Image (cartoon, rainbow, N blue to C red; front, side):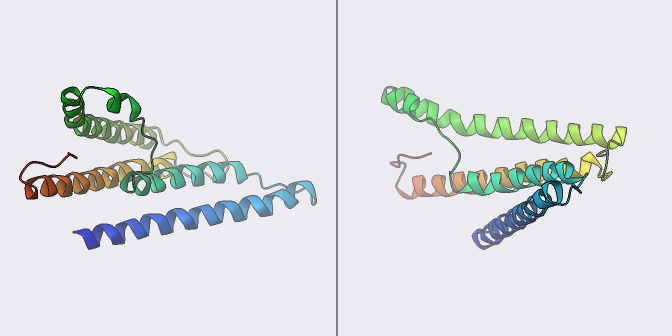
Length: 166
């Protein structure tokens, strides 16, 4: 399982990097086309928007896996030990609830885009394709978080229940 997730991580980062490189390339070429040749790409903004969505949602699981997201721990750390333990047990429940909620909401959003057949004005890219990466990203975050919690629980029981992290 660990090897599969490592491969998945590499694929996420590689695709996000490729999309970023394409975004930079199009933007870089777009500047002289607009200001030197007075022939701007009319589709550039739409394309950049789609790239930004994909980069964000492809990089999110990698950030989630490496714990690179912003975390405000000062509040939890300031609590008494018994309350802190309770909060630390509650956090995974909240994380799962939020991710599952976002998963269903993103699927609903994509279904609306499919039903209404909404497309970008110039490139005519269906918005459903642009935002289809959201539920994929959320599922990858759920997988990553489950793996992390699995290893934490395994470590906890290996220590005889004396571990600090859950």
